[in-house]
Image 1: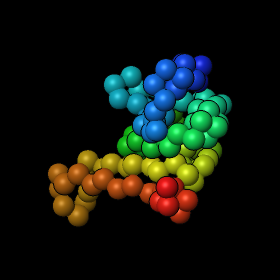
Image 2: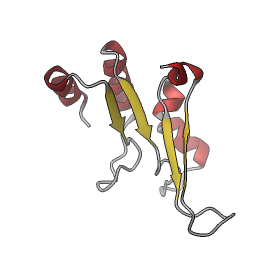
Image 3: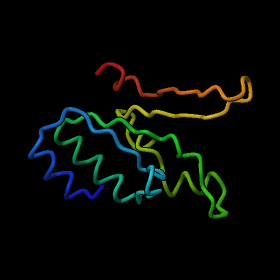
Image 4: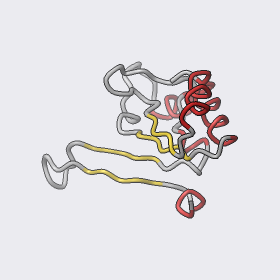
Length: 113
């Protein structure tokens, strides 16, 4: 998602909600830079568009960094702005095999919206 294209689409469609997957989005596996994350957040905040982050693949990283290094370099949108609800998904939970687990976390302000 290129910020300039987001602006064009907002002007054309006037959406109320933007669903994004900045960490290893399926099927491309693209990982947004911190700068791109901040740009999209800024655009949506100024246009009063609710962002929902699908962070199902956010816990995956294969480059040898520690989890803390990865989170610092690629923070979730929820971590950058608590107005962004974050969807998480785990395909196999140890409590019950093959039972997918989905959950949403959000800051109090996002819940009130």
